[in-house]
Amino acid sequence: MTNIFSIDVEDWFCVYNLADRIRFADWADYESRVERNMARLLDLFDRHSVQATCFVLGWVAERHPDLVREIERRGHEIATHGYSHRLLTQMTEEEFHRDLSKSMEILTGQARRPIEGFRAPSFSVTRQTPWAARVLANAGIRYDSSVFPIGFHPDYGIGDAPLGKYQLSESVLEMPMSCVKIGGRRIPCSGGGYFRQFPYGVTRKLMRMCNADGRPVVFYLHPWEIDPEQPRVGKMALSKRIRHYRNLDKTEERLERLLSDFRFTSMRRALGFE
View 1 (tube, rainbow, N blue to C red):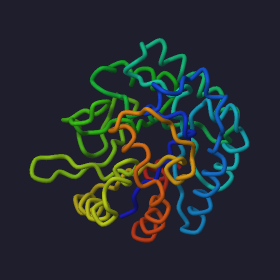
View 2 (view 1 turned 180 degrees about the vertical axis):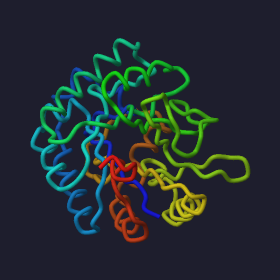
View 3 (view 1 turned 60 degrees about the vertical axis):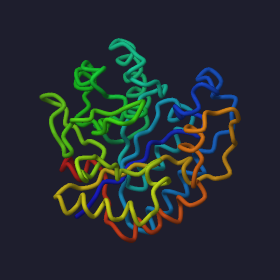
View 4 (view 1 turned 60 degrees about the horizontal axis):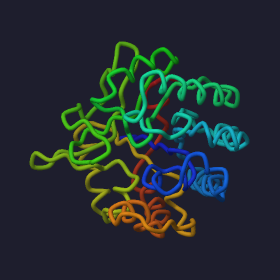
C-alpha cells in the first residue's frame, strides 16, 4: 500500500510547545533554519523517489518564497498550514478566516498549482471549532488533514472521530492522522513526536497494522525534527521539553529506514486530485 507523507513547513521557533517562551511578534529576531533543514529533506525524498505534501506556514512562505518554489519544482505538493501558527481553538471564526486568507494569498502568489489542502497548527480542528469546515470550504480548500482521532492529548484530538477518511463537510474531505486500535485504545502511528518517542520497530509495526486494516498511513514530520543542533530554549515544562527535543539526533536515520520500508506519495495524488 502507498502511504501519504506530509511535512508541516515551519521553523524551530514557530512550534506551539515554545509559544509561552517565544512570542510571534519576535519570530523575526531568531535564527532561521527552515531552508537548510528542508533542503536535507528534499534530497532524502529524491533518493527514495518520494512525493510529499508540504503544509507551508504562511509566515515562512512570506520570508522564504524561493523555498516554496523549490519544493514545488522538485515535485511536491504545496498546501497551507495557516499564516501565524495560532491554534484554531484560540481563534474566532473571523480570526481564522483572516489568518487562512493571508496564507492563501501568499502561497497562491508563489505556487503554480492551486492550494487545495490545509492542516491546522497542532491539529486544532476539534469539537471546539465547528465552523472550521465552513471557512475552509469558502477558501476553496478541498481537503483537511487536521483531525487527530485520539482523546488523550491535552491540546488536540477528537476521540471518537473515524479512523479513515470522511467528509468534514459536503465539500471538504477529512484525511485524519493515522492511529491503530489495540485493545480498545487508539495508538498514533502518524509520525512527528510519536515517531521520535517510539522505538522505530514500534512505528513500523503500527504502520503495517494500519495498512493491513486497509488504510494508508498519513505520516507527518517537521523540518526542525531532523535538526539536533537547533537552539535550545530554557525553562520549559518537562513534558514539553521531552516532546520537542527527545531523539532529534535519531530522526534522520529513522526516516531513511522508514522510506526504505514503506512507499509514500502526496495527499493530492493519493486522493486522485491530479
